[in-house]
Length: 268
Image (tube, rainbow, N blue to C red):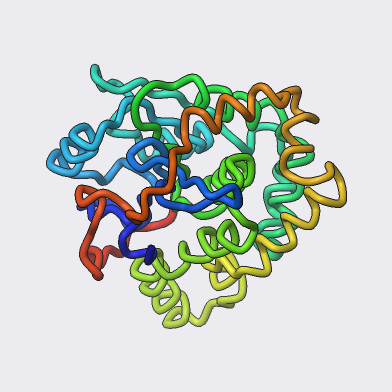
């Protein structure tokens, strides 16, 4: 499966993607139209919202902070057909810890794993118990969303190579958003190092994070156990989100064009 078949062409979004279709080491695959990862939903057009509903969307997990919600409220926050939950993934981090992400994203990911246990546990629990299609997202769908996606894919038995590849595609998807911001900053003579760093999703960032999970918790399943989510919970996740591999990459409804709308939305 190519990454273009996983990305959903929705007006107002650059980085909503299927986790369905990933193959596991056990020979199964992640069930399509059950798990979606994404960027902020506040720009979705009514047509795009309807597309998601027709795709099966029933639950939205918004991982953003309260101030981000105030600046860019979710279109599904008061939606009668969708269960909307705000679970700020960074809530337990101090401002100086969050600031580390400006220079060192892998360090921020590891801090999140080590300090944001309650939020991560709640997010995983809500995903496991939800019916229909679950969409979890943050502001750009790269860092908080990428970390949660890695934990889910790892528990489902997807290879580390594919987890890393899934994480790494975000920077390409988000280039239409970051490129104008970088150009504007350069025109103002600003130091681009910070913005260049936070726009990246280098494979090495996720490799470092997975190594931290191995070294500190014994791997992704060990991290689940540390959170108090036992083998039965992982079995339940696999029962809900895995299916036999029938050789099809993704359903026709999920296929999207090679190109996505070129947006220049601001951060947040």
